[in-house]
Image (cartoon, rainbow, N blue to C red; front, side):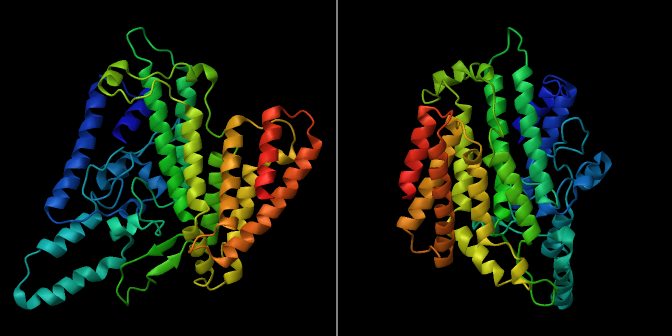
Length: 415
């Protein structure tokens, strides 16, 4: 996060690498890290829900973030607080203690007379439903069910956060296209910046993916006024899926020109120390890996089961997010070219082939956790896709050999 933030600001011309501002920037990051580790020394666990306590407007306010920080706790793994291109933002790192930190330390260390201890600790703990004291720790994040307890996200609105980070990544891609390097600089800075941007885009997309079939899990005792389990509302899931489709599954959502790809060499001194470091940096392959990881999650038995089960947890099942919506959206956005005719690019063929393989695998060899409804809904989509492929193959006008072979092979697999 520190390296990415430095690259973003440098690419925008807002931070000189050797300036006193850059030194202060790094010091703020170090303070953030040190406070986090001292929190562990004092007994505090990670708090990966603390990033959700402040709004986008608050995070964009320099004075607010200077006084309150960027999250509710130094025990978060904070994403750097980066502004959109062309805008000013708040402080990039957590440089002050958060409200959760004061609360947890009060519970652990406040001097209390023995005869008052039980009542006083209950009084302190009773504040747990205060939104500023939100808490979720390692296992809440690791089990992949809670869309609010995630590492390296920021802000109360996950859709706004992901959209902003994807915009920042695209802007950095474009800036590297235009970047002119001095003779004493290395091409490796271009490669590093793009790698950072792809990784951060992947994290942003991961936040969106966690909304699909998500279930908020709270550790509240009875009487807090909140249910311990709450499915993510359908509107948020639909927004997340639309953003995934537009930024990850659409045609050339993140791409670089051939000219820039020819400049993405490694730091050759690094390669001397690490012979495994590849000379080439195939951006399309990195982006394909991101697309495959998204499909792997969205088409998993686990997510399908949660979406199906969440319908039963909502008061209005007819308004819940449906598994049929997910499968139909994937079909439509991955196979957009079928309705247009013409050639399909190599990167798109890779993504489409991966989708067909996953569909076929589920239908022919369902796993022990595959739900009956998931399989039947996927079969409906497969039949529709097969018909679209057959129709596209009958046209064949303006279609090169690779596209024709790809469509034929995909149709044969579904057959």
